[in-house]
Image 1 (cartoon, helix red, strand yellow):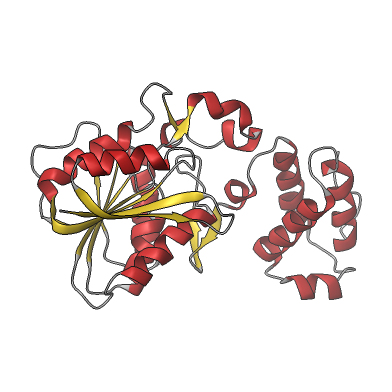
Image 2: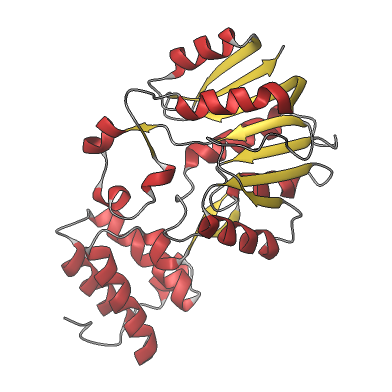
Length: 288
């Protein structure tokens, strides 16, 4: 089925009729305005004021294909190929996680706590689209920042985003579960949003995540939920300076276990922070 006319208001009617079995009206409107912004370069106000705007055949096809994809519950960010993060427009694809608001909060927390005029050495582990190190780099021009990931495809996208924003982040393919014996410089800060969703939590997740986002970047086995944190903390034994900081995004149900792990490695000033939904989703600790 295709959009019956080339008028913008009919595109909205078509979207509502096709997508209502899958989404509520608020979500459909949100998708519609995002598509208009992306394909027509019209903001919400201009869309409302130009409801009778006539679209070209190629523009109609773009909307038609997007609505078809949305019916499969494909994330709108993958349909558009981009998403906003820390006031920047990042390219995303199926090889990278879609950056979340909680991760934005982690970035802003780091920027709030640290001296942004200091030429610190920072490593982001599991960098994906590069959203964390690139966002830090835009606020922290003197820092030497590197992002690593196991996925070559994710790194290709991170490098593309790095070029788009004219930031100087370095990227390298490294598996933190099997890291190299030596790293190229000592670190002041390690930040990571590693896989922390338990396999058993899959039943709680929506189809748009399970079917489209990379499982490699999401899930960890129930019998070793802190696997990546253990590996990162062990890596930090040799690579993080004394007084250096670890910043993690975490599973809200694993904060107490992670604090115990950090204490076992003699970390001090361990701070567990809630996100805007009052869930414990971030942690910071200082190497003793």
